[in-house]
Length: 323
Image 1 (tube, rainbow, N blue to C red):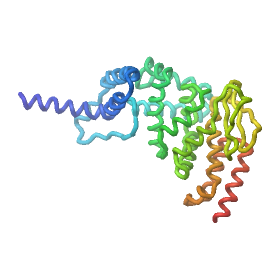
Image 2 (tube, helix red, strand yellow; image 1 turned 60 degrees about the horizontal axis):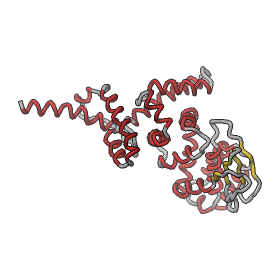
Image 3 (cartoon, helix red, strand yellow; image 1 turned 60 degrees about the vertical axis):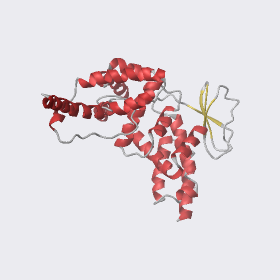
Image 4 (cartoon, helix red, strand yellow; image 1 turned 120 degrees about the vertical axis):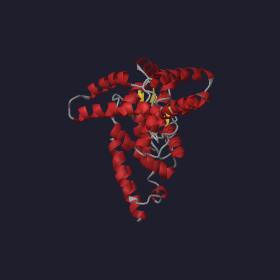
């Protein structure tokens, strides 16, 4: 009898353990324990609801397997994060295919995205609404999405760096940030490959510090310390909108941000990355400096600013001098 009981518990432990690991319940539990009391209460609700929901779909076939494959994505915070990413990618692929075949417009894409997410999300319709309405919960949710995004595309950047680049612009809502990632998936991959190159040469922390320093929020546009004494672009956000200062120039260029798919903060970061990479000390560190020109073409394309062409020409001259 005792042996039978032991085998029974052993069988179901083997069933339960891979499920909890695959759905990130162990790591998310450890993450929750490190948060303050108020945030713990929020996260415990997600953890409990996710556990109850996921156990209804537990895969009993693992009891017949000698080995169970579990994909490893590090720094996840919420339970079911990798499963949620699979859901999001599936939605994105379906809608992107329909869009490429001209079956739906951009507006239809966005509308169907939210309908499908509400229907398919691992967390359920009620909980996903709560996540998008609460900035802290969204931070954890979006961090997990970015971790899986970076892992899938083998981009060597931290989720914190990517989160700051996407989420610093305060004029964008959580829904807009999420929606922009999904509607511009291929383009976002290319953009962060550019940042990956910059981070490998300059250092991720140094690069992020530079980007944040060149972004200023202020109430009065006429009292601005624009940091324009250096050789970088400065983006200013004031009540009326955005303005950009060119390096070493006091003249403001007003910027329109009416397009949800255009993030002026990211554009400013790309332009400053190009400026930083003009320096010979960074060009020398590249195995094949000519490959930088391809990256600069991409930066020029992403920013769509005429005066960036002069920066690219400067880089070309720098490379020729080093050859």
